[in-house]
Length: 385
Image (cartoon, rainbow, N blue to C red; front, side):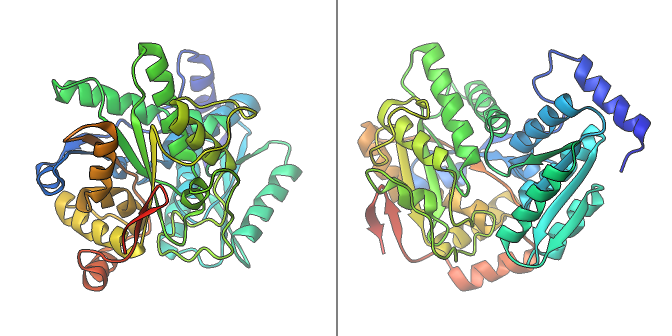
């Protein structure tokens, strides 16, 4: 934990530099064209390597923005409080360390040691709640209410979190335009979905960019794993919201019984109109139009994780592998191409990152899952089972 003078210095440097929208917490990550995946899928595949964030995941973007906003409001004595058994907690710890303020992260009692060690190495106070996610979250909320200098940092909701995630769209558009002569943006941006914060940021900025340039919105593809698919199952209904009785996917970074209802709302709106409507506006309708929802079995996500690990020569966890499934199971992309009237798509896949992975686990994916099997559901239609 930095001393008071260091904390004040970090805060003053940010507060006085008013042109900065964000602190130097997240980094610009590469967008790379992968020729082998392009040849395998029949589509041009670009991978956005969020694994190269200091936290190991995209969470640094939104959590970093939320933490910075809190410090702007509370000053150098700010106390950032998070509840997370994984990437959001690590991002909060790194953000607090960068900003020079105090951080407490509540985790559940099944949180892996590797995650606890990463949080503590950044100076965070880690509180292990006896029980599940609900107990950890309740503890964090209670502390934030009791401490006047505290701000609760939600793992996937809040305007600051979503605005922070929009930065990935700016980078993808700029990097794609610099790398190609075919257009200023890819046809499709794909990411995996848990709580829904990242995909909300992607939809928001994609809609804004389309409006600013009077162009057709980029098609968005959201992937959930079956068993952690509150988001995907909700979008298969005309209206309403699905809360899972049990979340039993092995994609631990995606597992939550209920995603953000606002993510479902925004996906319905974006799919129908290419815009993100206000909270009281259009909220009905299934995925379609400018948005595709796919649900895949863990076996496909695990297969993509080990294959992408070999491809990129760095470790990919199962939750991250979910987003890469379309590169290995191109029937998903072929379906979108038909609807868009194209023979071949350019696809930017967010390799979202993650902290729950080691070589032994990846090798286990290879042995257990092979090239993948099970069910693939796209917009409510079963493409494979």
